[in-house]
Image 1 (cartoon, one colour):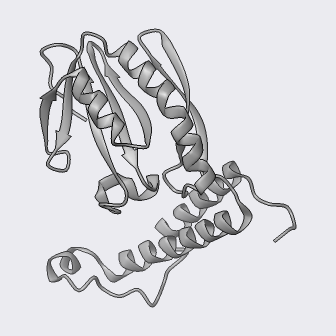
Image 2 (spheres, rainbow, N blue to C red):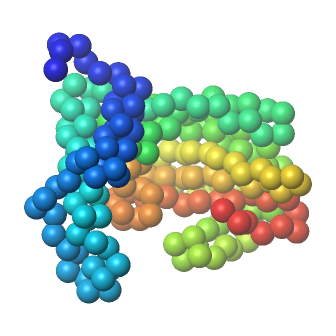
Length: 203
C-alpha cells in the first residue's frame, strides 16, 4: 500500500471490485459457518455464506481504514424533482459516517427539508409504519414534529410515467445503522412518502 490516502471515491470503487470478486467465488471466508437457523441454512449453501462473510470482513477492514485515516463516507448527489434541483450529502451505502460526516448531514437538514416542503406541496403524505409494510396518512405538521426529533435528513424519488413518489428519510444516530432498524434505538429512521393525491406509496 502506498503512503497516499485513498479517497472516498476510490474506497467505493475498491469495495465494488471486492464485492464482485466475492460474488464470483474468488474470495471465500472458509471459517464462515451456517447461521444456526435451520430454516435459513436449508436455503443458504455454505459457499454462499463464505462469499458473504468474505465481503463483510473486507468491508469492515475498509471501515477501519476510514476511521484511521479520516476518510469521509459522504458522497454528494443531485436530486431533481418538478424542475427543481437540490445538491445534498449522503453516506455511501457501503461506507460508514465519521463524526464529521454526521455534522455535514446535520448542517444539510434544513435545506433538504425546505426542498421537500416545496416540491411536495399539495401531495398526499404517508408515514411508513410496521417496518415499511404499511403506511399511515399524515399532515405536513406531523412531518414538522417528526423532524424536530431527528438529526439529519435524506431524500430520494421514484418517477414513472404519471406516478411520482418522493421519500424523505428523517434519521438519527449513525446512518449506516439507521436503515432497517439495525441500530435501534440509538440509530434509526422515519420515512415519509409523498405521492400525488389519490395515490398510495409503492416504494
